[in-house]
Image 1 (cartoon, rainbow, N blue to C red):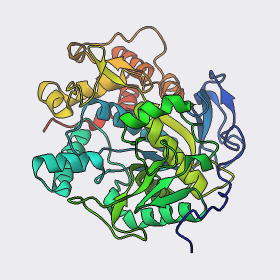
Image 2: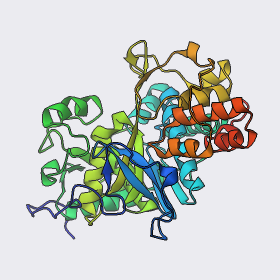
Image 3: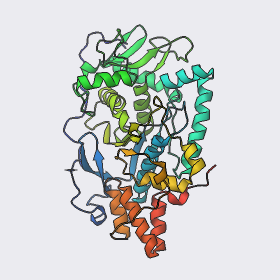
Image 4: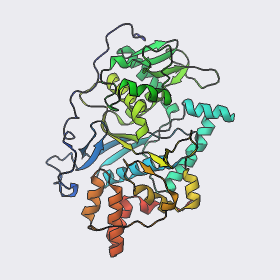
Length: 422
């Protein structure tokens, strides 16, 4: 079996059509029928219900059929530092989504990976003179405890990249074989010119991609690349870094091949939902899509629904390690109750870009006018996971003394499982 590109024409990739096949093909920009009033089982015993979720690929709210088995992959942490508010915002909203789908009767397989080998964790471990796995284990333990404290259920799978390297090597080998990759001096790159749909998820032009690739570890200046936007599938060994044997010599997997391999190994293809923060759309999720759909072309997309959470700002600046303005979950838990933190996060819509103001964390929200009913609560969550409105329904139920509805709402929002701060 050949390892190199060898000048062969690349194989066809990507699903055809503007949207995934039915039952998920109806596109709406607004909901026309309240989800709770939709008939069940919609004439199909395999469909338990519908939720309306914004799809970042089509930039519209679309119906997603809830089937007896649903798969969700959410990009997890690179454990080189403590969990911050952006992590909590993302994972708390996906926790509510999982609860909603399970409430509808689905078996939900939820994977949230741990990127325990990549440039960032290796750099920090080297700076601290620490083994990268020990660093990762310590930060993962803190992350898991803090997420449980604010009420998030553990995912079904928490795969670590280092556990799936053999499968990643096979994925790289397959992309070489079908003509979507090439090898130079022990490093293997994905050839974006072989994929005419590259960029379809992000909607970015080449000119927009280049600075983001440089900012987010894409190394467009690498002279070994055919195209500055080609990305690493397998990186040759560097002295002092961990390595694995491969057909191309010692090295380690690239960031993007890690996630697409773990998701396919655990959940198969297509995924019902794939998500993470907005900053992952390019290059990470764009490149994941290219790898999966070119390496395993089918008549369905790699992902049926792309969901991305908004960006958290402080004093007008995006929270980031480079700016030194991160708010860590452990610090918030030292100053506020976990219940207040979870409610505060859920009072922001998952797609909202928002400004963090700690003074507002313990304020009591105005429930506003509106119904206090089970239908209103479920309708809010089924309408693009509208947690702010769902919380207002809960508040109105509590104000009216409807204990049964209040408790049901609290359960579905994960507020009943919030623990005492460690």
